[in-house]
Amino acid sequence: MQEVDILVIDESRLFREGVTPLLNEADFAVVGEAESIEEAVRKIEAGMLPKVILVDFSTTDGDLSALRQLREKVPTVKLAVLAASADDVHSLALCFEAGADAYLLKAISPDALAQSLRLVLLGEKVFPTRLAALLVNGAGPPPTNASTELGRLSNRETEILCQLLTGQPNKVIAKALNITEATVKVHLKGLMKKIQTVNRTQAAIWALNNGLSVNSLPTSHPSPTPPRWGGV
Image (tube, rainbow, N blue to C red; front, side, top):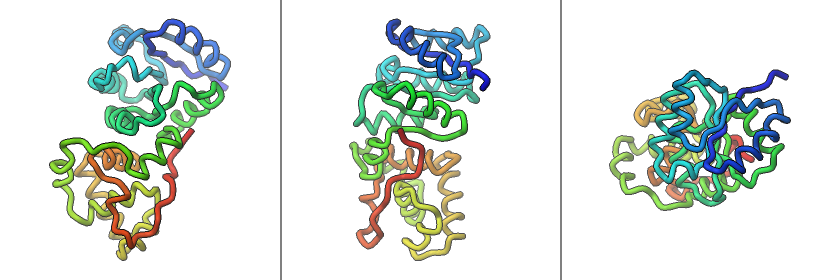
């Protein structure tokens, strides 16, 4: 298997030097290290272009503007965030909005890390199954701008957006809302255009970040099942 070039961003030199041999053994080639996103951007501007960037969430200090800048610099590179917390759904949502392809925990095993990065390379969105469950249950406080953002959507679009959090296909959503599958597709296309997302996962993350949850659904709707997105 051809090695995949990867850039590691972490303020801890000990972590960077520790994860490098683990990644190298799993068909990844660590071609660069950086203590901060800003340093990584400088290396990219100097000509480094990995296929994957692994960045520690703590390097952002809670400010995702640097992560967005990194995404803008390398729009085609896969971006995986490493985080310490297994319960911070809000940070997960912010990272995906900033352009991350994966949100992984630092407690992850080397094998699981390698497998997660392979899934990301295949185009999957990957995050911990525990956070997926919290997402479905609508954990975390809604942001202050929720009502303003949601006001851009029709009532039906909001209903469908809530249904996306159940991870169900269009056919099941149509049955739950007593409309046709074609109608679901039309509304889904329209709402994703309004909120500027390109797939169901991004739309679900947007919904979470703007205060929606499956608890917003009428009680007559069937109980949700866990999302079918990639999880580790």
